[in-house]
Image 1 (cartoon, helix red, strand yellow):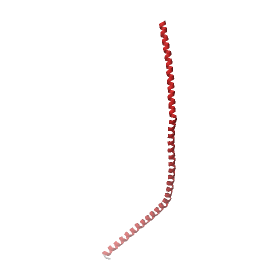
Image 2: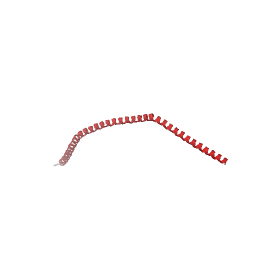
Image 3: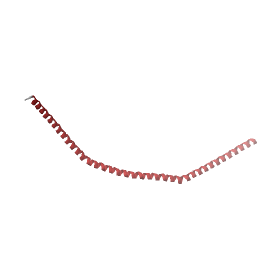
Length: 137
């Protein structure tokens, strides 16, 4: 065997080892791809019902939000009506109540002034009588 043949034989052996190594790598890669395919298929099988449940949940939530919107509108109407009722009550009852309060204040003031005038008259009469009694004594 010549030196060239030995070199060729060594090259062929290394080439065969390299090809065998690449075959092992490719087999493992094929196995990884197969497992990835199974994983994606499993995710797809689980995702479809999950999306259906999410759609149902969102639909139900939208229905409930519609009901809440109606309730909110009704509460707004009630508060507007209550405000209008309070304004009407204030305008209807407030004016006469103010007039009655002013009248009663006037009556109380007049009675108080009259009492003060009576007391003042009596005090002046007593002072006058005391002065007369002093002059006469």
